[in-house]
Length: 425
Image 1 (spheres, rainbow, N blue to C red):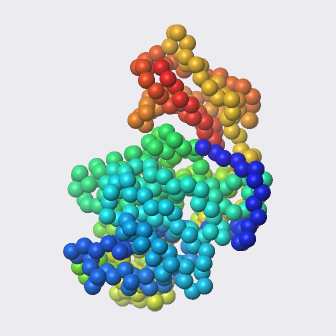
Image 2: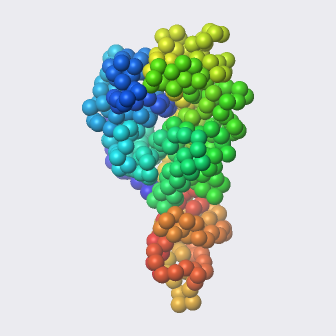
Image 3: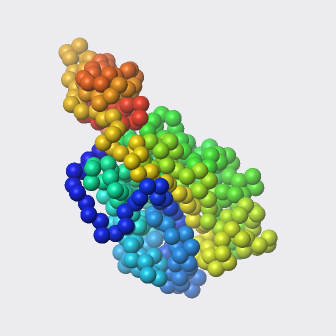
């Protein structure tokens, strides 16, 4: 849902200004605070990891830092905040709330720069195996007091590991659940989905779920457009994120750099900059990846000079994954201001005795409109498109084939502004 606030905000901290940049980073921390028979206090001590992660944070200084594989207990979430992020004079990082509907030993978290961002909400969009979390933030901007709110929605996912057919199927269940949730409950906007997807190829069903054209406004794109068979393929050495070392210490996986497991993907709004934030081309990279260490440790020869030596040591010691990062730029006064975008009002519907449903709405501007009807399971049942004019519009759709029950009607305009209606038959 879109919220337009008419409140006046007075910020004690620095707000986001024209042409400011948000740096986004995702990282699988490898069992931070979670001890197992193979990840122990001897080879993966969280106290040691604090200093390693702090070195990486000192170097990258992300405004949004999302993580996989952190212990489910609050102690460890606060420890990471206070021992790795808010150190060295930094006081601005805050974190989201903890969810664990799936009752996993490992959960996700989002940390953010509170001088630039406000965390508005946190919800779980699916809980098969592990939660996929949706954190919604908005920017502290000069135009916020006028109701021009720039939102950024961050989905944090850790999909099923493994290379078997059943592992791939479970990854697809997780992404399908997440996309269906967005379609049924959310409006289009600036969305990121980030995490350890455990993917071996872009042909995998979970990846295809995310890039499917039928997702409409919730179709995701790879910012660097590197589709293919990533695993064990030197052609993709520049985007591989796992494993940082050839030799396992019992906790870190070995084998060298040969898989692209970690991703940040974006919706079209962030590529086109239609809602106030734009992906900065060329800013996406795996931290510590120089493209010269296929099937090697990142510290092997030739010398890896993509990051300072201390950061490289921290990366190879903390986790078997590399972080992935990208930049988003904010343009003050850009068309991203919600108050300036078309939106629907006075929406409703009624069904005639003949089985036709009349959907009516008022559009702010002339636009093209798509209408879709979904089952409560998220299945798309019917869709159509037509032109709409500024003012009141009506669309008639044949719903005689629908059984008695509750359905969701979604109306979207050419810029993916959306209205949702409930249809009861």
